[in-house]
Image (tube, rainbow, N blue to C red; front, side, top):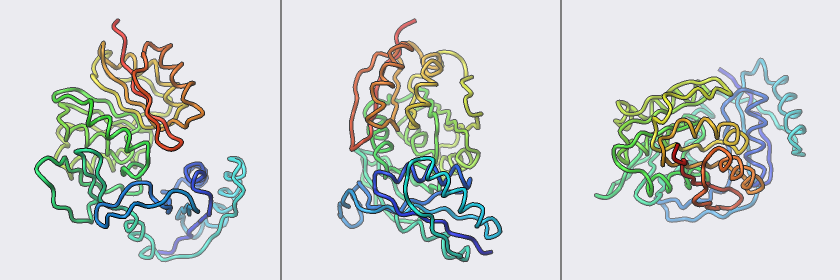
Length: 299
């Protein structure tokens, strides 16, 4: 089967916005090819920040022309002045090529190992075998790294965890591997829910990780006060919208780890969390991204 590869070259700091624009326009999985900000444990190399990122989407050949126009319009609406290129490719040309960009990466005790790579674990390693399946969340992005490190530092064995916006399921699997008794992993994308379930099974924690599809804007979380920890690696606007739901979902004294927040929205998120009854304990910065940690007030 033949596909059309839609591609756009943008500045490093525009890559996420360009990926969102292409994802919305095409409904396809998105590949971002850019210099990584995390070290590669296999080679020891530390990639450099900056430079040009290439964002790609793959669509059916029959829809290529219309999707290219839609992608160009979406980029313009996002304020990104870049032209969308297009080329015809065979399925086998791209279906596996994206894997070369994913390496073994360490986050404290947590080591994320792509399913197609080998890694010899040490006694203290918490190893996550991951097949992102084109879903967001591999540990390469600063927001995911900060969440993984916060989980490793905060999660207590036996706790119940809610992963809001689970993506590939990396945080849900990490929580289970770190000792969580029960993890609910929710997402509005059916592919993400499927991939999260597959990654939970691959890591032998599917008995403790429950992936669930939810509707956009749905805040009807399970029983009030049923979670000890909520991790939400999404975007500032959604964190603000769901702050009251997070407050209801957490037991008194429960913790929230929220990331995916650009620097410009840090205070908006902190204000919304405070209003919802979440005193902010800590804000960690990594490049332009922020990870906010807060605690649920007693009822």
